Image (tube, helix red, strand yellow):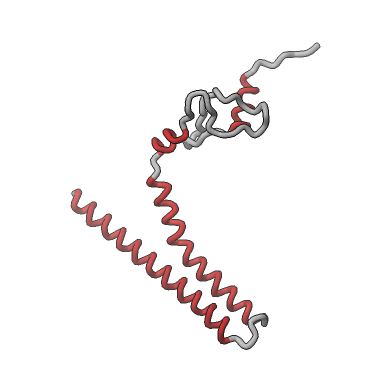
Length: 139
């Protein structure tokens, strides 16, 4: 069973590499077409020339988006939530983020995490603490 999973994982990686290769080649092709238009056009600042260069450049950037976003996702997946929360843990007596205002949050408050494990900003912590305080009624 594990051998089948290993074989499936290797085929997925080879398919990803093929996808990246095709995307990079298509991006180079579109950049080449934009460059060809730049060097062969009689007037670069004509409407047709600007349109063709812009469309070819945008298509090249769209093809480069696939590898760029998947590499970014792989980097985020490599960082486990445990390492993020350990890195976000404050030193004793110090705040992890600078206060936005002078009276925002004292430096000795513990780091609160939201549902995704990210640290809560200091202004939100201040609002949460104000909500916990009992309201005093004035006559």
